[in-house]
Image (cartoon, rainbow, N blue to C red; front, top):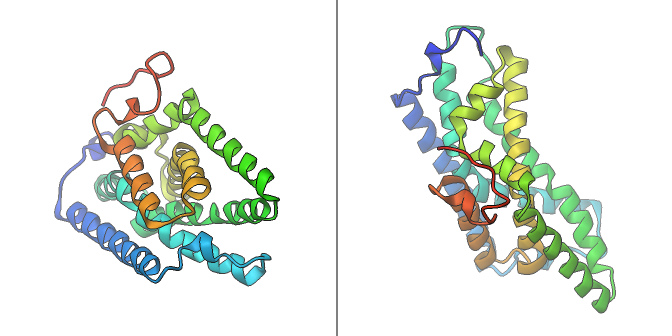
Amino acid sequence: MAGAGEGLVPVRDRGKVLTSIGLLLIAGAAWAAVVRSSLRGDDMMMTMPMPATAAGGIAFVISWAVMMTAMMLPSALPMISLYGAIQRGVRETKGVPLVAFTAVYLLLWAATGVPVYIAHTFLMAMAPPAFAYGVALILLAAGAFQLSPLKQACLRACRSPFGFLLGHWRAGRRGSLALGWSHAVYCVGCCWALMLVLVAAGAMGLPWVLLITAVVAGEKLLPRGNRWRAPPAWSCSWSV
């Protein structure tokens, strides 16, 4: 991002405020859909058709995308709104619009619904004892990742929007798309284990959705959120 240092100064302009409001409205609409679905008693995993079908898989991925929008968009708001502010400030070839940057993030999270659907279908085909062992292994793997240095590396990228954008910025539309993709990959890398817990332990019921959302937001946004999961010997030092 050489030559654009002046434009990197984050400015709390009206555009950034409007961006934040717009993203919160989208997340609010997604939450309304999730809550409405839960109140009707059709939590996604409990109504997944067995045996699996293409139509059922598509319906699940759409529902998963809505739920990921509700859960992940609020905690991604600092990164996305800062990208929009920088885009308005840099005096160079413009990158992709903010809507495209956000769409890359949401589309990658939607795509994670495909392996989730396949894995759940496989688990549900197991006999009860094997199913219990499979869920236990998933929870152990998720817990181990939460304590790993790789988790901390991904979390640092999510917790420091300005540092991330400074280190990954590329000029032009392709560069901006690559930037959006990198942001999405780091976020999935940071939170995939929590989503496994959501699917394996909670059957994606509303209480578990709310709990995992709170954990994700706490890890990303609270001052000491990166200390929640890793003991000091495993944590990498960083500064906010």
